[in-house]
Length: 234
Image (tube, rainbow, N blue to C red; front, top):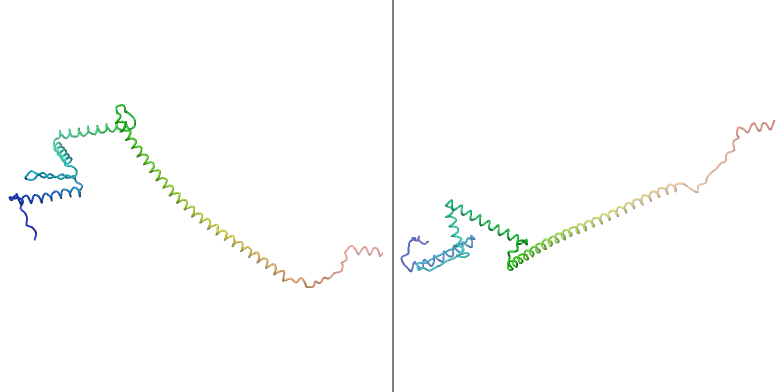
């Protein structure tokens, strides 16, 4: 069975009251610590016992927690009054104006201007700041150059690999072209051999050793010779 519900009222017995205070105080401090860690909250806890003993817990520092609390309470109180709200925003504007003036002055000093009012210590701090800034610029520049070199090397490797692949393809095409030329040359040789074989077979069909019969026919008299003979006889 669960515990019965405790009536929330002052414990009359001092011993029981002290035991309950010790237990609940430890539990409250534990919960405050867990709340600050789990929820990233700024927690400040102050406990005074009935004997006047102080127990406290602060996630950052008790002073900063109290100052923040007082500031927010003051702002809330002022926002309830329109006149106070105007004054609050005027103070905020003045604070921002001073911050802007300080930043502009620092910028001019970093650019080497308006250095007449600075002492040796201020100039030394400015010099250290500039050296640190210059060092940061050099580191960033070297990092960018290193990254660019790596990228160029990577692209060069890809181009070299593509060049190797293209050379392989060219060699394959060259080999195929050579094989094709060889096949064409062999086909031409076969055609030439076939033509030579046909001519040889045609000549072999004719008998060179067969006898040849020749007959001489008597000469035919010409038409203009008959009158000449008749004239001699007469």
